[in-house]
Image (cartoon, rainbow, N blue to C red):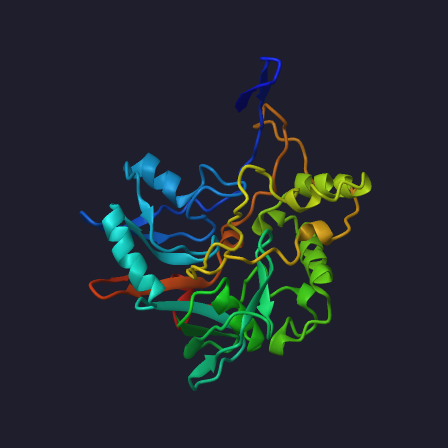
Length: 353
């Protein structure tokens, strides 16, 4: 709720009723806590801090509420769907010290993921530049006009259907590991963006996409819409209807903001994993979902929910596997520290889905 005073000295009250997107019930495990840092094993589906449509279901909020860990300083971030080692500093001094290592690329990062198919046994180095297609939805692709990236991959195991791969990113671009794996033809098994039919029959392998950026975004949205999984993209059915109404009335100036359920927050968490300090600097949004024509006459698949007294709108209750992506930050090592988490269950050699 927000209260403002009008020029005529009247009070105006605006009350907003929101449903946060569903997240996993898996608890946040604290790996290390001392006088300088708090290191946790972040579950998949949880954003690091309040952003977009998330307020309570965030790592920062849960650590404060359940563990009384407040005034933490974010050192680095992980994408909402990525799990694993996440560090927070307890003081500004510690934050600056570690942040300097991040900026100087002195921080060694090791990830594991499960990808489609049989990944090559030999070491694979990918240095394809990455370009952000949409900051709001959080979609990137390989493009010569993008920023330099480098990721080293090494296969750990293969079970006949999918491979577990170790990933060593030498840069920290948005969705770098996921985009490079897609380019190599081995996207993450359950990646909700880069392993979708919207990218074409080869799903973006080799950077081959038979669509414009606008067509790609529209196709991604429609694919998730048909699966009732728009929350994964950080948008809702209401956002789409609002967007369509703005287009119908010719109000194009507001269209670019309509995908943001919270107009106060212009920094969505859909592309939250970047550690690159240049990520948002002087980079105007090239496209967003506002450019995609939507059918405002389509009936919503949502039904009334007796648990919601206010609006009685329900969201499809996702299964646990819908809230997990097989990408995990396994180890972070700096000049004076090294933090590791356990290998996730899906990364075991004999694991089968």
